[in-house]
Amino acid sequence: AKTRRSVLNQLKAIVGQGPLDERAVTELETLLLQADVGVTVTDWVIQQIQAQIRQEALPPELALKLLSGLLRQVLERPYQHHAPNLTPVPGQLNIWLITGVNGVGKTTTIGKLAHLATKSGYKCLIAAADTFRAAAVEQVKIWGERAGVGVVSNPSANADPAAVVFDAIGAAQSRGVELLLVDTAGRLQNKQNLMAELQKVRRIIDKKAVNATVESLLVLDATLGQNGLRQAQVFTEAANLTGVILTKLDGTARGGIALAITQELGLPIRFVGAGEGLMDLRPFSSYEFVEALMGI
Amino acid sequence: MFEALSEQLEAAWKKLRGQDKLTASNIQEPLKVVRRALIDADVSVQVVREFIQGVETRAVGKEVISGVRPDQQFIKVVYDELVQVMGTEQVPLITAPQSPSIILMAGLQGTGKTTAAAKLALYLKKQDKKPLLVATDIYRPAAIDQLQTLGRQIGVPVFALGTDVNPVTIAQQGVAHAQSEGCDWVIVDTAGRLQIDQAMMGELAQIKTTIQPQEVLLVVDAMTGQEAANLTRTFHEQIGITGAILTKLDGDARGGAALSVRQISGQPIKFIGTGEKVEALQPFYPERMASRILGMGDVLTLVEKA
Ligand SMILES: Nc1nc2c(ncn2[C@@H]2O[C@H](COP(=O)(O)OP(=O)(O)OP(=O)(O)O)[C@@H](O)[C@H]2O)c(=O)[nH]1
Ligand SMILES: Nc1nc2c(ncn2[C@@H]2O[C@H](COP(=O)(O)OP(=O)(O)OP(=O)(O)O)[C@@H](O)[C@H]2O)c(=O)[nH]1
Ligand SMILES: [Mg+2]
Ligand SMILES: [Mg+2]
Image (cartoon, rainbow over all chains, first blue to last red; front, side, top):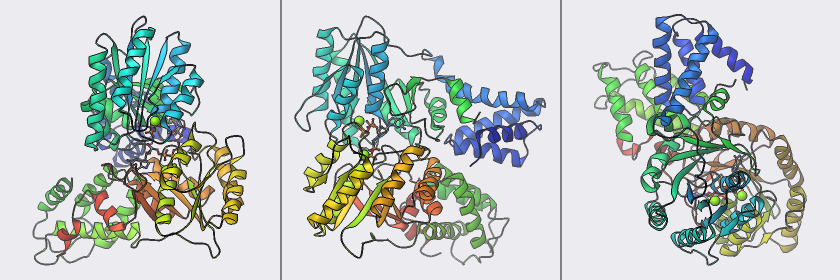
């Protein structure tokens, strides 16, 4: 495997020689495609670079800056319509609905968010609305304990998730909770019944918590390939997404699908998960993300 | 999806009407179309490169059969090559000469190992076998609880020693327990781990050395992107896998990871997971996977004539 340093040197050599020849295009394309950026965004980035380099020859350092600037531009596109940072509004109820396909890290991320919010002084509560998967409630309860945050659940098997959310909103309202985190069952976006169930959860939130600030966040695993874009599209329809959380960035996967999502759907990336521990979550930074993607 | 690929291929061939042979130069455009389709399907860039070379070698010099459109003939070459790489037949589980036979599950976090372990146990139970599940994931919150719940659902015992015992010891005692209970299969569930996590990979290697399993099955999520190549390479180099299970194929991902796993490890994909329920396990059929990766519903009827 190439070391990070050599990727950087390679990049410098590629982009610092005037208009990109076929070999250079292939190299750059490979770098982006191997990060799961996808064909569409990759083509766009290369076109942009070609156009600029044709106008004026750039020394390697500047050409590299041009590339990272382009990638950041893609990632920051959503900030035209969304604030660059996401924090709960203090002194009122915020509801963050956490959704995604199976196994991406929703429940773990809930634990991390609960910890982060509590540390920042918010009064927090978790709704255990995955009533389907084996031991899902037990799992989220352990995370609640770790973060020192209460968990609202329904012990009966296959309880209605919307009912759990309804109860949790009631509890949050009466206890003066500022951030209610809703854990949902993993679901593949082509399962119509499960997407309808999610829609119902979303409707309950909008109805029962009229004055709450609602964030609907899709969790994506950095190892996901091009299907991630499809997920974001379909979950947007069912849950009215307002953002994305990218997990498992502690591995070698670069999570390039994030670029396709910001470019094509305009959804901001809000947090990144980089580990299985309570503290392994931080706000998204396009700068750090691009550095990691380019192997700098 | 198939329409898209075949239309693009047709367009690429339009310029070449009247040519009666596939040549190195007239297949370049169509090859580009296929390359894009494979990358869209998440086949690793490196694997795509090798694959395209294979197709090129096979295609060049082929006479176009009269009455068959060259784009169709070309796609048949692509399809055949894909099936060839995927492995042409379904490969069953390896059994030990003496019971119990041991299966070790391995893979990244959240890919579906625990679920697949339970599915395999049910699959074996339905063949009148006596399986035992072993819970060695002492890290993930409620992982043991999850396996025990699944075990109850399918009526298969689960061997567990809590979270304070070393996973290597749990695996070892689990196998011993299976022997004394006269079980004929042992399925060892393990914690998810990144292939770059030295300590966790060391632990898995030690479990393998200790229990000497017949099968080490790498569990890979069908939605995995380019990372499939890296993880397969490292798991195979550091642990040695005997096969793979591709999960979550009930989704709409094209599943190009299958090609990468197969090409890089040389080991067969043995089963696919097609749902969250414990019954949702099926044998792997290479032809179906090839059609799916190409995004073609019924490739066979289309290329029958070719
Ligand atoms: N390495 C790593 N592992 C993670 C990260 N986030 C979650 N995981 C692991 O991924 C696996 C799945 O995490 P969960 O939180 O259960 O995922 P989920 O989306 O809630 O899963 P379902 O509810 O079954 O759909 C667990 O083993 C987690 O420890 C991360 O940022 N890095
Ligand atoms: N739709 C679908 N979901 C699946 C399939 N296999 C597993 N899942 C789901 O994927 C999620 C993760 O499955 P697990 O079996 O917990 O995965 P794991 O590899 O054991 O996870 P860790 O132990 O945390 O590494 C759960 O929500 C499962 O229900 C499948 O074939 N199809
Ligand atoms: Mg969960
Ligand atoms: Mg597990």
